[in-house]
Image 1 (tube, one colour):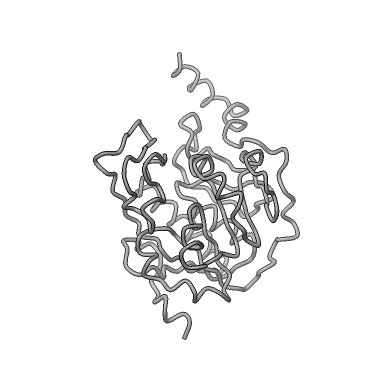
Image 2: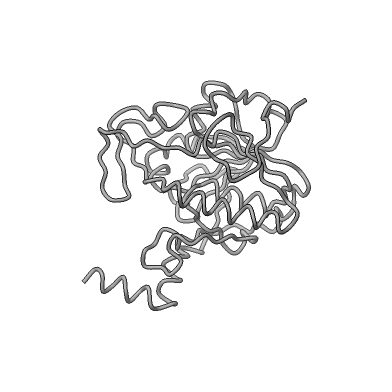
Length: 266
């Protein structure tokens, strides 16, 4: 029965389109942010272990995007991004108090999570198309890119893809990725149920052991899919004369041209 329902949704555009796009009521009007930072550069901060090799104080006078559990870096080093983003529902539910308390000039969330946010100061809510994750969708695991966040943003296996679409809409012309290790290890003591993983020990895949630490849920990262989506987004940027660079210290991500992080501040 479950498979029959999936097939019905898959073969009916009205059904899969509605299911993929999710909520639209309560979205923000992003028009005033269109090209607000045109021609500027920005840093998108990943949360891999290599982030501990970056001096984040250098970003004090830079525009930067950060996500999810970056509040651990705020607590330990005082780093605070310009833009803060959450995509993953497990991240929201497992860290709702810290996310509500976190301060940033701009905080972007799927409108699906609006009810979870009691403190809506500086919060903006976008429509998130989840077709990439839905096996009922003909767009399952197929990269798509939105140039208009007033319409929707597309999932793409990593919250970094949401960041890249937001940065594009805001007008940034040069993007530098840091902390993108592009490697994951699923601990042997983790509970794995399909795509969902529950940690039973410290997190070895991020800059802080409690990031996806004991009791927290996360998803199979599918790095092959991440890489395909990066390649697609690279093309989207370069088609408009914009560039994405990898300034990560080390790591395994080779889709983007590498640059020296510290050399960017000389």
